[in-house]
Length: 479
Image (cartoon, rainbow, N blue to C red):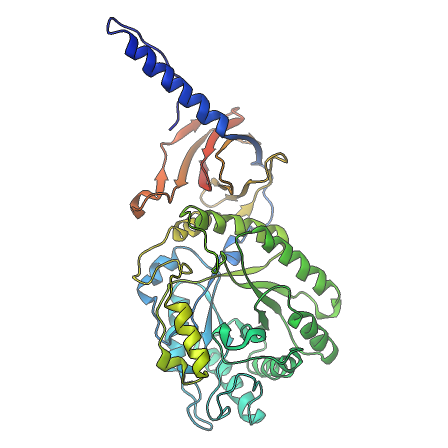
């Protein structure tokens, strides 16, 4: 509740008005003292490079079922403007049913759905065709016939290129260090060195079919594992193509993503001959083993994570995932051990909070955080933060086509914040609107709360807004 002023009235009904006014004044003072004051400065006349927020707010999905189980949400996902959508080329897609026989039907449906959202498809190859892997054993990394394997990868890439739906990104393996617990049927050896030859074959096959495609890995299960340093040494020594490096991190501290980006940037700097290699946080979300119970936490976490990824030099991010879905033991047991298939059922049929949509296809508040972030189109604008409040951050842009400035502010804290925003460099009067994301209630229609527009005359340098506990707001200034 906001009050710009207050007055106390006393009439012949007397004392109760004084008491009520006193209680109101006490409530106002108590509420104000509980808020932390923060000062920010937005430089409106210093546009920089394109922010490209949709690169780090891209999405990962799949690995659970061959059906396009989020197809009814395609238009909604399109509204979020993801740059890429990552999905698994898993064995249940039945891509190689027999020797020299290819089947792209199920993959085609996935690729077409992703392209319908305006995103590029990123395919993670995690299949084990029975022709090439007759025994179910996660420790077996290599096919029994490298020629057939190379041809399979080559023809897959070529198919989408000739079809007119070329796939921009190809990734190899998924969390191979932890084996079937990753949801995929591969397990590296203890040094992960057997991953490198497997990667080598696929990277060369992809480039042979489409020299413009981008290849990468290893989709490490955590940022601290040694898979990636060893892979970089291998590809550097053996002149194997690599265009992006990838890892996963599920955490309740979004600052971890800043540290991840910095770590991998430093690691890549040790291999300058590889050229410009992108960094891809292929799966990110809150700590799924310890999910926060506060419904306001996850959506604000998303915006805060986007901020830290941009600061840390992360090029691409894939929020995992679009929709929760129950998995089938009978499907996974076709290419996993009984223990592996059972672990998939036990995990995915539990109380999951991964998806933008839940098991019943109901939208979660996280969707609306992505919706606010999707408004950050155009050139980035410098936002000077308050060094005395590490909880309040923001990202800002200027869209020259729409002639408007957009700013997403987050308060990643359990203490509300009073923000004084100084505007510098305005060339005209502005109209400010604020959209508050408040997920504290159960009604999705009330999660986004547009506020009345406010006129900001030319020469006005400051506006004041309040961010609640784990608060997030979109401020739009229209010329």
